[in-house]
Length: 158
Image 1: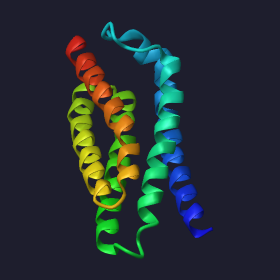
Image 2: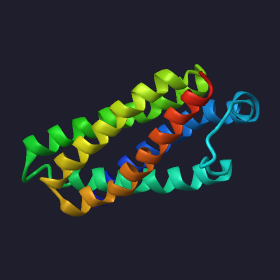
Image 3: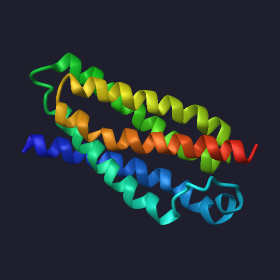
Image 4: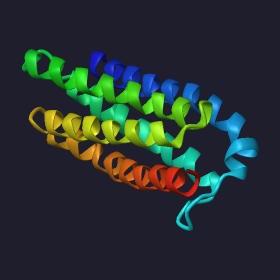
């Protein structure tokens, strides 16, 4: 039961972070975001919520699975979990920089740091649980795409 509770706790934490971040995002989609220039490869707005929800669930399951290895590999699990928490905080920060402050340049710099932290989290997870690491790959791909989108928005609106 404790293993399921750990996974559920991290999934709920990830979803809560996503929900809190979405508040500032939703407020700015019909106003500021609707008026800025966006690249031709920008997906429709409705795509973001289901994609992020799925990614938060996968991230939470991955991190919970790693947390479940705490009894056999405490030092590595703590290190990996620290990277996970840092990337989760950076994930939330992006929304506030981009949508809250309307600052695509700062968001572009921050999302590169986010990508690097996700990649490091992937590497740390891989040393502990390969399935957990692989669950982060769609997230890494999506953030790669989001990085291109963010930088493009900055470029088109400078």
